[in-house]
Image 1 (tube, rainbow, N blue to C red):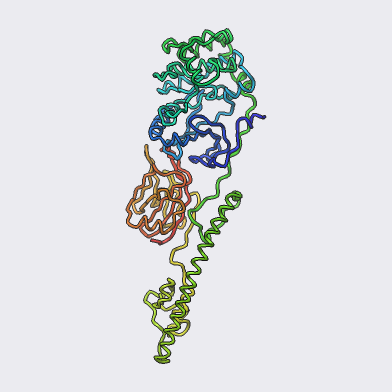
Image 2: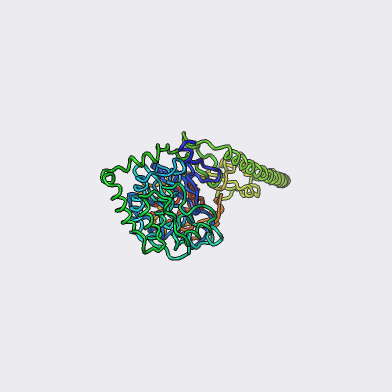
Length: 555
C-alpha cells in the first residue's frame, strides 16, 4: 500500500464538505476527542482540522475548558510545533485547525520501517524537547504526548494536540469508561490521577523515545489497567534499550517528577551526543530518510451548489463551471418536486371549485339584472382597481392600471366585465430574489434596498461586528430574528416572526452552518439569510458566508 493511501482516507457520506469555512479533502485519522481531516483554506493552503466528538461537544464544561485551552494554544510559537491557526469552541460541533505537516507520524514511521537508529532518536528527542519548552512557556501541559502526536516532516519533528487533552478531562465521556490519552505513554502521577506538571510531559517524552528505539511500548502491551499498574508500581527495563540512550531515558523515566530531567536539559544532552552533526545541520538528512517521499495532498471537495431555503421561481441557473448535483441530490430534488406537484394539484382543485362557484353566482346575478331591465350598467369597480364582485375578491385579483378602471376595460364601460378580469390576477407575494454566497465581515455590509445587496463598504443597513468573545449582526433600521431549529423558512414565517420585533442587534453565539435569520428593513423589504460558514474564532478576521433571499416590499 502506498504512502498516500496510508495517510489520506477518502471522505465518507457522513462527513461534511465544509467546516468553519475550510473545505475538506480527506480523512487523516481519529482519536479520543474527534476525527481529523485534511482541509484547505480559501486560499488553498492545507490544514489539519479536528472536529470534536458529539458526546464531548454536548458537555458545557468541556466547551468551557476547550475554549480556555484554545486561547492558550494560540500563543505557542515554536519551530517544532504545528501552529494552531483557527478554532471555534462555540461551533456545532467545536473544531480547531492547525498547519498541516506533510509527513507521517512517528507511530506510522516505526510501523513502516521498524525501530529508528540511535542518531535519529537523539534528533527526535532534541526536537520534541524543544517543542515542549515552547508549550510549557505558555503554561500548558501537553498531557497526551505519544508517537501518534509527533509528526515527522522533512526538516524535523512537529508536536501536535498540545494542551487539548485537558479540555476532555472530567467530562461525561471520560467518566463512562472512555480514556482521553494513551495509557502506554502516561506518567505515574497521571495514571494515579494526581497533579500533572511539565515533568509529566518529560516522562511521556522518555516513553516516546523508547518506542522509537524499540519499535514497541517500553512498558509492554495488553489491557490498559495492566499497563497502568506496571507504570505506577514497577521500574522500566532499560536493558532493552541501546546503551547510548539509557542514561538520558533513565532520568526522563524517574518515578519522582522532581528527579526527572527538564526539557532544556534533554536538548543540551542530545546536542552534546550529536556533536558536530548538531552544529552542522545534519538533521534534515536523517528526517528525509525516515519520513520518506512526501505524499501528494488531495484537492478539496468541490464547492457545494448553494442551497436556498425554498424553491425560487425563475431564479437564474448557476454560473458555468459549478459542480453538477450528485445522484443523491437529484433524487432529493425529485422528491421535493413530487411534493410540490401534489400540493399544486390540491391547490388547483380548490381553485377550480372556487371559480365554478363564482361563475354560477355571476350568472345568477346576471339573470336577475336582465329581469330588472336591459339598461342596467356593469358593476362599478373599487377605487383601488380591484373588482368589487365576490368572485374577484375571492380570487385576490387586482389591476395595475393607473386610471383605476378594470384591466382591458374602456372608460365608457365597454369591454370585459369585472368578473372576466379575475382570470388575469397576479400573485399577491413579491417574487423572491436569490443571492448565493453573500459574504459579511468587518469591511463588508448588506442592504436589502439595493438590487445587489452585497456592499464592499460599511455603508449598508446590515453590518457584521465581531468583538471578543462574541459576534453579532447590527443595524439602525433593520430588525433581525433567528429561526431556532428552522429549515426551509418561508416568507410568511419571516413575516410572522418579524411582525412586532425591533431587534436591531442579534448575537451569533447560537448560530451555526444552516442557521436561518429573517431580517426586515424600514421599507418593508424582507430577507432570509441562511448561514453556510461561520468563522468567528479570531475576531480580527472573522466572517460569515450565506445564501440570501430577498422579497421586495413584502411586509
